[in-house]
Amino acid sequence: MTESLEHFFTNKFTCTTDEISEVVKHFKYVEASKGEVLIEDGNVCRYLYFVIKGCLKANFIDANGQETIRYVAFENQLISSIHSFINQTSSNEYITVVEPSKLLAISYTDFKLELSKSSLFKDFYIKMLEITYLNNHWRIETFLRLDAKQRYDYLLKNDKRLVQRLSNKNLSHFLGITQESLSRIKAKK
Image (cartoon, rainbow, N blue to C red; front, side):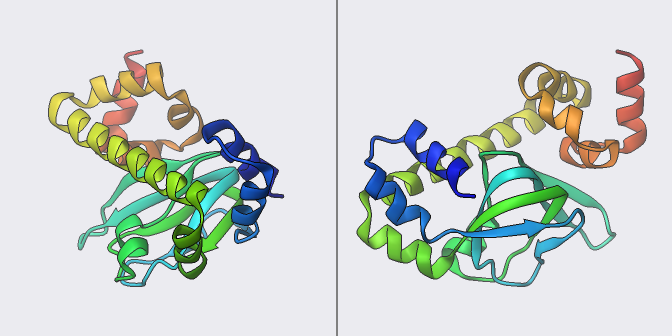
């Protein structure tokens, strides 16, 4: 079950098979059901997940019960409540399974162990932080510069998976609009 992760390391980093094996052995296989909550608001995030198959979301729920989706991870992507995982402090978000998923999880303890001894894992960590930064920058920029229709059009052009695989409810929460607004935008297409 680790082939996807091994392939991920082979394609993104210059490394040996032994280095990959040493890192991958710390990831444990997990199956998760649709709707399952892997981390809850207020709990410490103890795992970083690599998605083999399926879809997960990082989401916030405000005091009025309104959901906002910060990030969606599909196959060959990583997801965690990153600030909680790095600092081992309470999370302010949820990690929720959107589609039945097959995952590989590394614990915080194993993550820190590999970080202290593996140059491959250090490179992986830097890449993970870069991707997180770029994703967060893109999210902020699109919310500041684009209106709802423009954000939807951007997804259609640049990341159709979100439009194709998320329900209207989840897609509207990702775009920061109501389901009714999303329906109107789709109807005009």
